[in-house]
Amino acid sequence: MFDAIIIGAGTAGYVAALYGARRNLNISLIEKDLVGGVCLNRGCIPSKALISSAEVLEKAKRAGEFGIKIEGQIVPNLPSIIERKNRIVGTIRRSLEGLIKANKINLVQGEARIISPNQVLVGENLIEGKNILIATGSSPAIIPGFDFDGTKVLSTDHILDLEEIPEHLIIIGAGVSGCEMGTFFSSLGSKVTILEILPRALPQEDPDISRLIEREMRKRGIQLRTEVKVEGMDKSEEGVKVLLSGGEEISGSHVFVSVGRQFNSRGFGLEELGVVLGQKGEVKVDPLMRTSIPNIYAAGDVIGGLLLAHVASEEGKVAIKTILGEGTPLKYHQIPWGIFTAPEIGRFGFTEPEAREKFGEIKIGRFPFRSLGKAHAISEVSGEVKIISSKEKGEILGAHIIGPFSADLVQEVSLAVQAGAREDDLVHAVFSHPTLSEAVMEAIHDLKGFSLHKIPGS
Image (cartoon, rainbow, N blue to C red):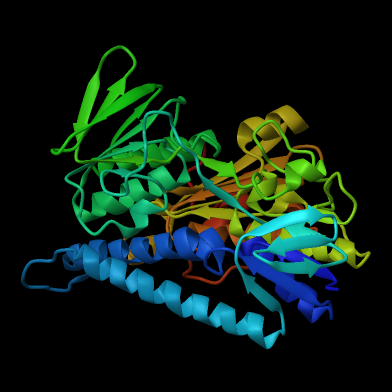
């Protein structure tokens, strides 16, 4: 009998398996598809590989700004870009499979069905374990009337394998994937239209970040339309036609549906066991990843919340620690994340409206990259750092950065907060010059009113 059976070898599942194995647990890991799950195969890694190619393309087109003369036409080759992406994913997946083998984890390929709190059936193979961890992830959400065909009507899975540059890409949803892929295909030369039912792009982010990314997308020629409702679609040999409420039609060559995720919680025995699910189908867990059934745990996208790979990793480890009697809840509000648009976005903690509602009086420190020497040296001056603190206690409540390498820069603030630092601790930190990190320093100083390189009152 295994100490734990883990269903799903995506980020939550394989990290839990590796962590459990390092803690001397006997682990069986079941996966019906590819090891690495969505993040490695159809999400984080492949999308960032594509975006990296677009960044090189844009840099090459701007070479003259840096005093570099490039002769001849600079054009993207999408099949080659996709081939590079596939090589990267394959290399990482093989490495991960090697890690699983080296840690003596019992990897089983096939569809799992839970038949009791201690038994999982994979084909005719009965696997028994003291505990079960559900890490089955999520899948692209579907809009009625927009049936994916992988050629003209695309999900977040299909968009990463498209081998022709769309003439006109219509994107439904201005969330993370919609904005990332919009900037990617815009870089490659596509006309891009993004349709969003809510009042702003990236509606989960701080309003200032939404305002700035909307400005940058429009500068790139992306047509962003907010507060519009999509009613349906017509598809023909020529392309697609998206129908909006009010009778308006938008014609394009391809449509990318990016309206969130649905939870992979049904069809493998949870309902029969009586595991409690939420209204949207997410598996309900307590802060230690325990479901309503003793000895059954869940982690990652399937439990809802923050659908982020690094969050899934930590949730998987919390589940294993709980099995070992060492579980402690995650502090979700301290977890950072990045959005890889152009420019990049980094964030952790509360947005300004959330902070005002929860903490009352707050302070805000800002600093624009345009006032930073290193930003000018690399010709990346768009964006700003915004840091929020509580007025009474000086606690850092959130950091929101849009600009070059923001997903890395936000780690500085997040790490300090996770280590217990407050505003008065950070204000004495010395930052190297010339670096992009100085924008973080200046925003911290601005909380106190003495950002030396910022125009007073701006």
